[in-house]
Length: 475
Image 1 (cartoon, rainbow, N blue to C red):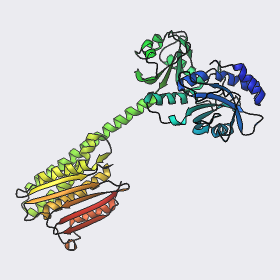
Image 2 (image 1 turned 90 degrees about the vertical axis):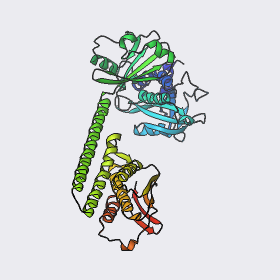
Image 3 (image 1 turned 30 degrees about the horizontal axis):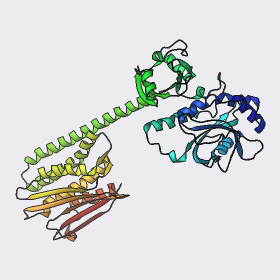
Image 4 (image 1 turned 135 degrees about the vertical axis):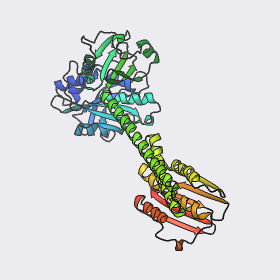
């Protein structure tokens, strides 16, 4: 549908207080309205405040998408948009602030989602608004191409606020941060905005771009024929020298505006990504070195324990070795995963393997099971949990299965909404809790870690059927 700019002038003169200079701005912007409607697959309108109606605007120009069914059966140019039905329109007129994703009721009583952007004159006055409408039932975009399409629409109608429309033809494409190049069906460039001109100058193009072929302007090895065959939006990221770009190709039905190429400079974003990757590698290496250092300390203590004759001293050193290795386990997992969070069950499984090898008793058939939920926590919290579990299992191995040939320990992880819980359950001989010395190093470590480090509660229950040690902590 060809937009009649004389109709725009007639409606504005008859139904608004706009000056002719303001009307010319609206007429200039209307040239890109059909392109926006086609590329965004949305109904697009320009409304102006109505002089004869309070709290109402009048539609002065509209554009329907040509390859998608419009939400409107009838023409709405000349009809009113009242505050009750279209609050976003009036809000933007009054505040000059864009309105995003606000529900509205059309002149045909259809519920839609509106995006509204102000159009200002050289004095910064809001003279009109540009509106994009989509069916509310289509809010949930189901494909990546549709997400890109919505994003493209936002780009095309954004940044009007506060801009002085003084370019050669008033097109809003002159006020978008992306480089925009529009080719005809022969692949000849018909339009470029100033951002595109500056971009190609950086790339070494010193001649006028308009009139050049796509093959001379393409930034990748894509051919225009292949792009045209797809008849949909394509996105790619490329690197040229030290610069990185995201390129979108939008195929149109018009012969003159056949292909739009939007180029975004993402060099800064890619540089930040590289910095994050580098930092991740450094952090990974730090965890790896901490793990190695802790294992070295454990090895030195193990060598020292072999020189000690007293069983009590050897047991004390072995307990210290287990504590050090429990801390090392968290750093080992972090070094592999390169993240600052670990799965508690992974940590406990490694403690189990380490404990069985260090505390193996020839006359005890011991089974250790790790059950329950997968729970991811911070590295700091996982270290505290690992130490508590280590102490509890060590106590089981030391006391729970005296004069027993078979034993079982279950470590159960329960994930909660706010607090999660870990239980260490054994089927040993049990003990009298009231007779446990408060000065016991193992108990002191457990109580201190649960209370001070995990900010949780500790519960110990024991009888002749076994012992249950339970502690919780905030997620």
